[in-house]
Structure formats: C-alpha cells, structure tokens
Image 1 (tube, rainbow, N blue to C red):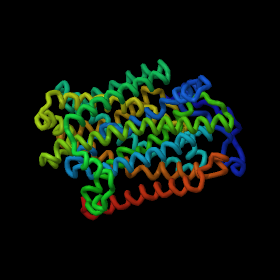
Image 2 (image 1 turned 120 degrees about the vertical axis):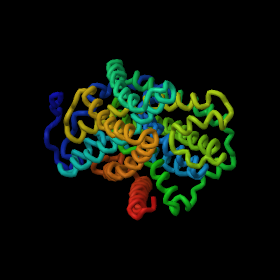
Image 3 (image 1 turned 60 degrees about the vertical axis):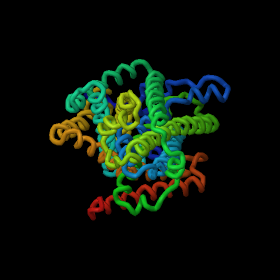
Image 4 (image 1 turned 180 degrees about the vertical axis):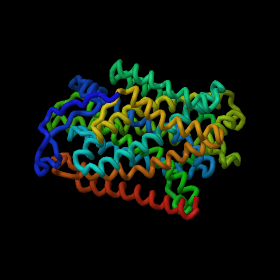
Length: 456
C-alpha cells in the first residue's frame, strides 16, 4: 500500500538561474533516518568514527555473489591476469562513490532526486526504469548466491533456497526498527566474516606472488580477447554498481552535521575517507576470490570453473585442507545475506527519488524479491545449477550496461558550479570524472559489438 506523499517543506518553485535546481530544497528520502546519527565529539578521530558506516553499506555491493561468479570465472580461465580489472574497477568506484557522497551532502539531494529536479519527465521515467532493471539484476545475483550457499551447506534444493531468500525481508524490517547504526553494525560484522574466510582461503591456496603482482599490470589482451573482455565487463559491472551511486548519495544524509560551508566540507572529507577505507576491504575480498580461483583451479588445469558449486566441490581436494569448501560456502552465505540488507534501501531511494512514491518497506522488498525470484526459479527448474551460474554472470553484465545512465548525470551535476557552488569539481577532477564516464561507455559499446557479431 502506498503511503501518502510527504508534503514538501519548501516553496514549489525556485528560479533555476540561482541554484541550477527547480526547487530550493526537497523532502529527503529515507525520512525516517534522515539526520538521525549525530556527529559527536570534537576530535578528528571521534568524528571519523561517527561518519563511518555508510561506506560499508556501499562496499557490500562490491562483494556480493555476482562478484564471486565473475571473479571465479576470470581466475580459473585466465589466472591472475584480470586482477588489474578489479583494481581499476575499485579505483573508479572510489572516485564515483566520492562524487555521490559529495552530491548528497552539498545539495541535500540524492542522485535520483537530483535527476528528477533537473531532467524532463520522460527522461526521468526512462532513468527510473533503467535503474530498477539494475536493482533487479543485482537482487537476482543475491537470490541465486544465497540459494547456492544454502544448497552447499544444508543440501537445500536450489529452487526451495531461492524461495527461502524472500524471508530476509523480516531481518530488514527488524533492523529498521532498531536504528540505522544497528544496520551498519551488522553489515560490518558480515564483511569481517567474509574477509576472514577468504584470508584463510588465500593462505592455504599458496598463490604465486610474482603472478599476483603481474596480474595487477594491465594487458592489451583483455580488450583483444572477446572472452576475457566479457568476463572483464562482468567484473566491472559487479564492482561499480549503478544503484550504489543512488544509495550512497542518500545514506550520507543520515549524519547530523553542521549545515554550513565548513560543516559540509568536513562531512565531504569524512564521507570520502569512510567509503575509501570500506572499498579497500572490498578490493581485498574481490582480489582474494580471483587469486584463490587462479591458484586452485587455473594452476591445476581446471580452467572452466565458472560455477560456484564447482569451486565448492574442488576446493578441499585440490588444496588438501579439510573445511576449505565449507569456509567458502559460509563466506558466500554471509555475502548474499549482506547484500540483501542494502537492496531494500536502494529500491526505496530510487522509487522515492524518481517518482515521489513511498511504499512500506516490506511491500517494496517483496516487489524487488519477486522480480528476482521469478526468473531464478524458472531457470533453476529448467536448466538446473548450470543455468543459474550463467544467469549469475549475465546479471553482472546487465549491471555494467546500466552504469553510464547513472554515471553521466552524477559527473554532470557535481561539475556544475551553479548546483554545487564552491564544492564544484575542480578542473582536474572534472576531467578525470568525464574520462572515467566515457571509458565505461566505450567498454559497453565494445561489449555490445562483440555480442552482436558473435564474439562471445
């Protein structure tokens, strides 16, 4: 059931020539937690801790089950060679998430609201559809990943596991009643669980140090080889997630900082520090997955391990360490459940921001889950485990193809002096941001061309 619209606190019109926006201010998304976390203390350390949290909710999307599928496929097929793609993707993520948090802090708008307040209605509707598609693709990866983990750990059939994932809506609803910091705390605990599991996997897999170092050096083969490019695009799509840009620009507004130029400048700095540290953990986990795949599978001639179930089956016998497969599955379950916690928030922000429609969290969650569960169940029934694995990789490529529709507006808004004032991107950052935006777009065009010509 749709909730009544919250009336705007501001005048309906504001001269665009003065601020670059149609309205002076907008009613914030996630109004129930808006400015609910006070920035306490006077020391830099205590303020940094107060601002820490949103970055980890964002980092969750950079280590979800979709990343596992693409990293496993890349590591088993091409060894360490795609580590440079993970590093490049992570650096782009740091830049884009930094711009996203700055947009939210400076303008008081999340990216969806900013688009609605700038573009025409038809353009806004198109952007909303594109973003909802990306969220559905991401949720599909989480559904499949969690179902696979339940199957590996408890032998629950994939189809039943897919349906059981809908129950996580109860966890989300419970945490929302406890406060935003509780949600952040649970996310951080789950991230730590994933990190410890893969630290264990990396140590016992004994990777080649020279191979790892060499893998971080870019190679032209990535662009020339259609198969490698396809996996690289999947890694890019799984790492830089479009809906995370909308999410981050909203949840940074949960902090109650001074609404002055100095207060906003400090908030921008601490928010960037928060997301950079969190994304560094995501870089470690993504790289660890690929390194384990390269050291365990590629080195032993198992170059076609693209399915999580295959990796689970092979890890213990190949590494000769009992429990290696179970630790792998435990990390996967933590990853899938962690990712679901932020899916509802992203969906709520996008729907409120683009359409000004508020739904009760459980209604929104069930809609999102339904969009992901239906195709997952159909594929699981018709094609079995192999089909779900292919669907997992494809969902990440779909995410990559949505990126430009979020990146270009973000770069444009943060580079507009009228909209950002003294916080506008300096010339060097503006140039770098547009380079990244066009680089992502060019890779997408290349990928589509390869698919249409039968290169993949």
